[in-house]
Length: 189
Figure 1 (cartoon, helix red, strand yellow):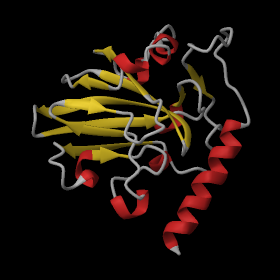
Figure 2 (figure 1 turned 135 degrees about the vertical axis):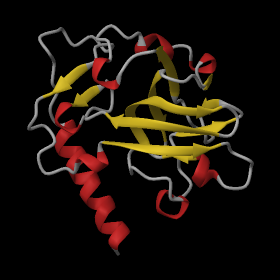
Figure 3 (figure 1 turned 30 degrees about the vertical axis):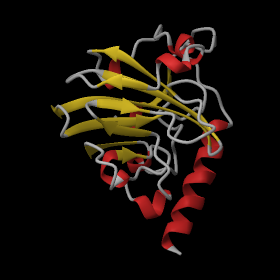
């Protein structure tokens, strides 16, 4: 019952946030990373928008410790029903984890989450999905994930805070308030 209530609350708050588009004085062109005003997440917990996680190298046995679901802010395989947006395996971040998955991941290099560039070429990655479904993990790098599969669309970014290659990685993540572009919830960073 508790999990159902949390899922309903997250879904309702996402719908409220997705109903508006926030642009920082730039033309909305599909590639622009914008920042939401401080009241954009009113009523939604920052814990559902921003946090940290440790992913352990996937050994084929326990995807929960190797994966992360940004929409549900969880690694719990029962709560997420083994639906993860990113999986750490062999010192790579993998997306495209289910049959109909068209997700992409882009390495933006050494960029802080709060400094995500407004000109990040995220749109280009969507047109080359086969080149961006598994990408090498680098300490200090920030990655943007566009999830597009049967569970819906989502945009999130994460930065590698700690890395023991092939063993584990510690990330700081933020989920966009938009399902198409990176709209940062400034009041949660």
